[in-house]
Image 1 (cartoon, rainbow, N blue to C red):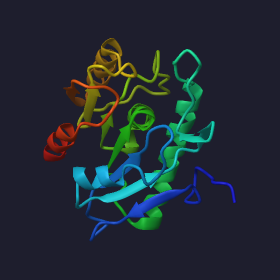
Image 2: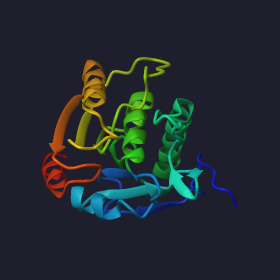
Image 3: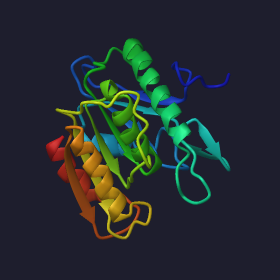
Length: 210
């Protein structure tokens, strides 16, 4: 049966906390070419007491799972990002009903393609998450297509990028932070000297603040 992004037939992993209703839920969004198992260990490191909900990206490119497409010039297919954000919000709502977690206590955690998906989810579906943790991310939209400009007051954003990561150029990171902050979010930026990877030090530091 084909996966429906709006229900729980979408491939995913659910690892409940001891008390799912009172625990925070981490929505884990993998990078290109990975799957719903890829970030489970990261989720445990960030919060060993959280529920972990990890869906698979439903876009396939040359056999690789993604949450949305990229153009040949490296820009993103923005219509895909908008569609994926709506799908993830619907999936979260269905999952909270099925698994009994608090839909108002969800943080999206992503790497690369999944990190961009997390950022877009916060911008376009702000009621679905309390904040995001984005590793190896960049600005998704040239101009964010808001139906209604969101108020992100009280939302938390952690961005953890690499100085040598060509996926995350400094000027786009700055523009992304400016957008989040202009909407009221509290943003923390961490930079590591390497490339497109997750720094264990960043994970430890963010876990202490999350």
